[in-house]
Image: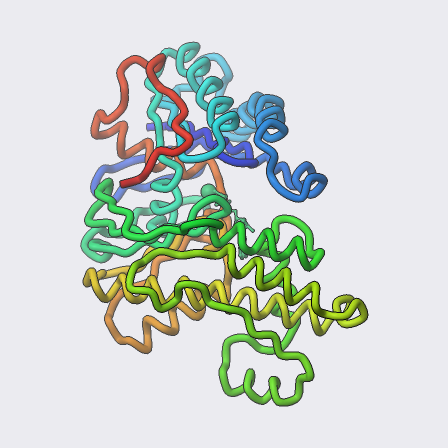
Length: 373
Ligand code: KG4
Ligand code: ZN
């Protein structure tokens, strides 16, 4: 069956059409997907402004829909789509409503069911999509995956989740203030690295001294005049919670007390970026590993925009190997890390198959603070 996914929880307007087959390990063929990113708008404001983002969604949704239908060679009137899935939360209220209302109108005009999908489940499921051919993904076998620990790290969320099975989730830890992606974005802004901060910090960090191999790092530290050390907030607390606002403050103070000439130097920016990335990765990895051990996880699932971070992926993989727990790491294909229309389409497909959606689409509402479990 064909399913259309609509995602507008934050700043990207995303629509995808998938051809989905099977139930136990479904196959998803991406017929078309479009992402209309508001990066330029956000660069102007240095972040996401909900009402500006809402206006952009309103403008972009019909354009993205036309693009996707024409790419998938489907007619606008009776496209033969079986269901629509729309992200109803969590996310920014005005943005979610824009997508939900657009989806309602479309479902009415095509006279097909509308399935509300959870944004965080979408991120989680992307880790389980294994590319078998270009644009074709098969779901990992449940036996290899569950029980799993998921680390979902995005611009709006940082959560550790126990996933017992598909659709059975429990959040065991989350951030008490800023999300991991937000920490990247805010510190990048302090350093003048632009928006979004994650990729900018990763790039600057890579250009600096080696990050992964301890031996090399130590040698380089000895040669380097600059060594910045930042805090790892809550890294050794007993719970699975996070706090990243202190890291941002530490970066701000360090930046303020550094003289102007040093601040402008490449070496300083690269060293700061390296240490920010290390600090965030350290905390995420320590807590995720602890959760995986405590809950006897067969796998660790990474998801959300920050899961695109190569340093985080490589170091998490390395830690898992060292502990020899036998747990596997599943992380999304790069283009599935950040928000996309495939997320609601995939999670909506499972809900649709199980009949888990309101029969009257008019009752569907955006829920900015809805939880995954
Ligand atoms: O999941 P996402 O696209 O949107 C939300 O649901 O928030 O995540 C966006 C976040 C931004 O904070 C961005 O800086 C971060 O993901 N991000 C990265 C990388 N790519 C995107 N953070 C670290 N490293 C990256 N390579
Ligand atoms: Zn997201």
